[in-house]
Length: 112
Ligand SMILES: Nc1ncnc2c1ncn2[C@@H]1O[C@H](COP(=O)(O)OP(=O)(O)OP(=O)(O)O)[C@@H](O)[C@H]1O
Ligand SMILES: [Mg+2]
Image (cartoon, rainbow, N blue to C red; front, side, top):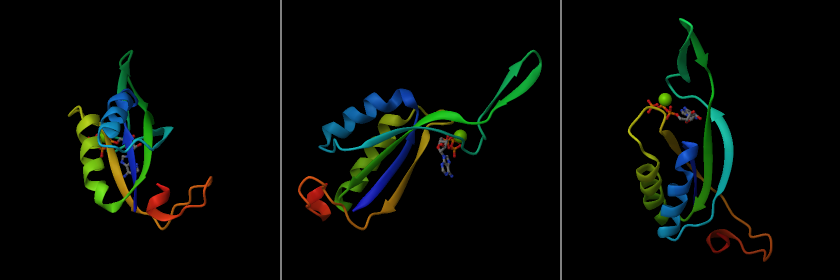
């Protein structure tokens, strides 16, 4: 199993969730976050002065899935979250040791 952490534009959540439903992967956690990438936020000009907006609002999607689903999930998130402009976000992939479904005590892939 792996965990996918995707940082996306907030207005892309709807389409990303829909496309994940379409491939049978509905389970996820969403958190409001602030961040910056290599442009270090954006610079806005106001009355001839440049103001740096340091951290931009993004959403973090957390999903744990079977290894054989990861490529498909990453592909569909990248496709549906993309605008082609800077700041589209990033996807991180991490190994997961185990999962427990609290209600039943099931573990591993059958607890997903
Ligand atoms: N190296 C990183 N580690 C953790 N979070 C990151 C990292 N890079 C980007 N992020 C997160 O992703 C969000 C979007 O990053 P962004 O898409 O601007 O990345 P980028 O590398 O600057 O690419 P681009 O040139 O397309 O803008 C950031 O606001 C931040 O929350
Ligand atoms: Mg950037």
